[in-house]
Image (cartoon, rainbow, N blue to C red; front, side):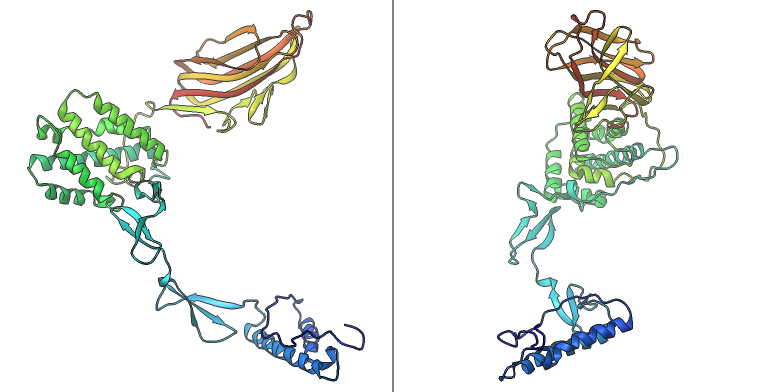
Length: 475
């Protein structure tokens, strides 16, 4: 704006519409009055450049329309900055309504009923119609379609198990008992000479709690295969009890909250299949055929949500039969491994433990790492090894790698050797009952004979792997 001339007027003078601009004003009536007075100035012809055509008055008229709209909305909104209200229609929940321009009338904005894809469950598999023309396809990745047995939500059944109980034990007991019951009923159908469709109908009744997960095609395939089993006596198949062995298999594969992962489910199927193949009795193999088939119908989701299905809230499980297998490294993390608390030796650099300088022992000085892990309890360690690097410089060095496990293992297990460049593995050791690990890695030289052992080497501990029977340490 040039003094005495007003603001420039655009061409065309009236753009035909307005734009909403949010501004902020100090929250006081006097400030608001000053702001509106300044704003209303644009609705006066003196604010605009003047000529003989009267364009200043025309520009002021355009602005008065915008100012009147602003004041009306400010009055009805009470100063709130909402531009439009929306709501879900109470009459038709799939319709979204809007109320604009401070109107009291609600009008339809979006009809969600017209949107694709449409969804349905067909034979236990989620499908979608992305065209709206009834062209149903399995949802998700065509190479990995949605399968509720693996992809449906499955809340953990025992996030807070009863006092003195564990979720993994209770889920194992409930599911093993339920599976034994279902397998009994399947075999009873054979004993009673039921037809295929009678067996299918009975199966759908006893599996009611899980039919939302089970593909009908998979259930019919299991029943068809049942009629093809070669047995000596269906009565013996029916009466063979699998609860004890199945609970043992399941217990180690359930998490503390009673849930089961896909990886552990695959382990269950593999272990049960291996156990079945070693059974000499055809009737027992037939019973386990049904058991494995039922678990495959449920998947990890069914195995999780069935953790309370039989109402078992107390059960005795042998908690020392499960073998854990953990690898600590830069990818998995190092859990509770640490340098010796009393004398920190070594540091974690880029995910690997790196030996530190200046460690003195008698007349030797070197680089050294010492790692320590306290186990949750004294237990049988069935496997232990670690990977490391020892690197020499321009002259020869010596090095040592050892493992100390207490108690009651030998106090020291190690080896001295001439170092070579690159990584090596030390171990494995097997069958030690211990409560803690100490790993010792060192490169050094003799201060009395530095030409023989000069301090030029370096060392890192890259990974550690252990297996044990009992409560696993943290990863």
